[in-house]
Image (cartoon, rainbow, N blue to C red; front, side, top):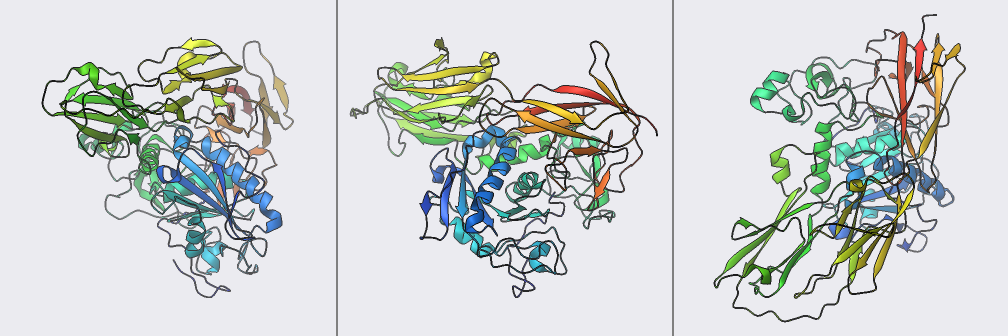
Amino acid sequence: MTSQNKGVRREVARLVAVCLLAVGLVGTIPAAAETPANGDGPAVVPVQTTGPADRRFNLVFMGDGYTAAEMPAFRADLERHLYTLWSIEPFASYRSYINVWAVEAPSAESGVDCDPGLDAPVRDTALDMGFWGGCNPGSVQRLLTVDSRKAGALADLVPGTSRANRQIVALAHSSTYGGAGGSYATASGGNALSSLITPHEIGHSLGGLQDEYDYYGRGVPGGAYSGPEPSSTHHTLLTERQMLEQRAKWWRWLGEESESGGVIGRFEGGMYSTKGVWRPSRHSLMKTLGYAFDQVEREVMVQAISAKVNLIQDHTPATAPIGADRTVWVDTLHPVGGALAVTWRLDGRTLPTRGARTVDLRTLRLTPGAHTLTATVTDPTPFVRDPAVRASEALTRTVGWTIDPSLTTMRDGTGAAFTGHTPTGSPVGARSVVHADTTHAVDRTPAVRWHLDGRPVATGPNDRDVDLRSFRLTPGTHTLTARLAGTGETLSWTVDARAASASYELSDPLRTVRRPGRPVEYVYDGPFTMRLTARDDQEGAVVSQFRVDGDGWYTYYGWPTDADAPFRFTPGGTVIDDLVYGKLGRSRAVPWDDATPDYGTHTIEYRTIDAAGNVGPARSFRVTLVEP
């Protein structure tokens, strides 16, 4: 997509997918840039570092319309976007695959072009971002675009990154709702919903996911779909029976409770059409901001993230035959959500190594002649059910060696030392996998001894990963240590096993009903508001969520027009910019959805996700809506 003449139309990134709804592991962003590029010009700030840039998936954020004096606002906006991103799967489980960078490029003027309308001024900014598709009268207001050439040039300042291993996300200094997904993702930085725009747009840009909206222009139903079977993974013309019989589309997930509410099935509408095409869930992040990716979308995103990295980070050199008088090793990635599996095979026969990262060939007593040893690293995540995805290079990698017992291996004198580990500077969650990698000598395997609160922890052959979920930790703070046997090296982590808490505040009800052993009940005859307030005993932001009558968990963001305002429930929902928010009972996304009030009693649950990834227990209250 292009525009001409900055005053009216400007060249912008070519968008693969236009987003028309635009719908922790992270510490505080440094107050000053750490790597200036040129004097007072752009500067690269490492926000989260999990490994070398050329071995990680790199999210490169940049701001536009933030002056030098407003750079703290960019850092605050970015931090808020990241905390929300880490609360959403699969980013929560795979955030250890991701480096995050901020490229700080101060703009000469504050704000971006054509914000909020075409009559708004054109501003002198670093990335020439603009609403209305870059000030295009034929576009739509919320289409927020960026100059792709300038964005790419800034991203090139981040050493070790390239188009193949990075995703650019440009944040506009604006409180106006908007964004876009394509080669680059964009979002407004300061809108109440903006931190939810970012994962939606990354869904487009990284995962190739399509919009599930049943309209193209807001307020106008999209009509009937008339094309062939969509190539989109999460859209189809098939019935559930046809999917099962043909083993097509999301047949493996049918009937499962959807991560975004309800069950995975067949729901009409999507790809900007109201009729004639179906999606897996009633609502998901690609349809309605606030909900999660459903399982179908999540599987796509797992593959997309994993395809940006190599599960095998390093290994014994395999370019020439090796002797049988040594150890052979592989170093793997370490997902926060679960350890990778390693299977060793000798001449095609599986060895009983039980996940070990090292094999001592001397114990195998190999016969003369050449032998073949392989190590296959696989991600056993339950987020993936498609065997083709599981077998792809994104989730399965194999390295092999030729072994010649006649060769003699020279000892290299490598000493034992830690080479990489889960960051120790901030608490880890009680459901995290913590890792510690070591050097590799050809004649021995350094052992890692783990202790939890001073007590030894049994790990089995894979002593590089510890899955804290297996310990069912009591609420509170614990200490995990990793000691490298034979050395004085020790690593230590604080384990945060206490989830954040949340409290709610409602507008005044007609009356309050309290019954022993039952949640408190509030009675209303019309609209009411709910404010959720989170608290934690550790540093870092907390994401609050709520759900109504067991539907999907919905991220609390305040109110669409004001992040500081409480969420508003009404019998029919509130229409804002031709979208509907806060209908009590059965949710409603667009004006033509069923607006029939759901009078009666409803259960509202709420919970938190803290910076360490702990998901708090759900608590609830009840609301009875009576006819006025």
